[in-house]
Image (cartoon, rainbow, N blue to C red):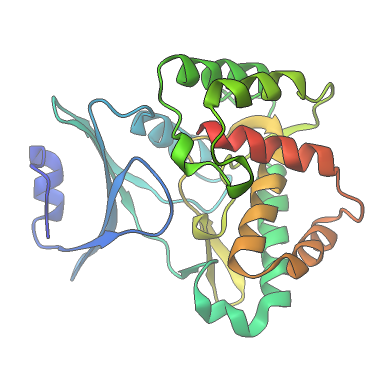
Length: 259
């Protein structure tokens, strides 16, 4: 059921569509899949007081055209209620879908191939800086403003305070960074699979230049959550890592608690 009062352009583009609420994944967005005879769209809505901006995702999707298989921006609108991002759909099932459980070794290979493709995007002219100093400053701002959801911490950190975790984050920061272009949230719901290949990537609002372990750490956690920890090394080996940096994996999973 449509719950939004739409700006005129989006209303015109979606007037003949059926709306289906999307609840997979964790985000500030209200997300809907729109289907119709002539369209296959997704629309995201962020309220005016949302922490993150859909403009970030719009700009990244546009920059990635021709570099990675990503949606196309149909339109972006902003009004007093918030932001609206209308994007085209991608064919396939997201990597968390249970349909993949019959071929998990193959799925791990595809996830690794997909991540290598992301990390191979040249960063020389990339305008999106997600290096650790930038992201730590953003995390600190969220702590100061009370925007970190302490109830959503991983089970091992339940009961801890955001300020306490932030001090740990600063103390444990890696000294060296292996900078590449990163997805920013390389989790199973954000990778789309079709016909034995990665057909695209979604939820790109945090994409940009960062340590490759930003993606590896969240992929490891997501694989373990969705399919079991026994498949993690299959993924890492297919990516090209036999002995992962466990300290960096733990660090970037800690960092994700703030977002």
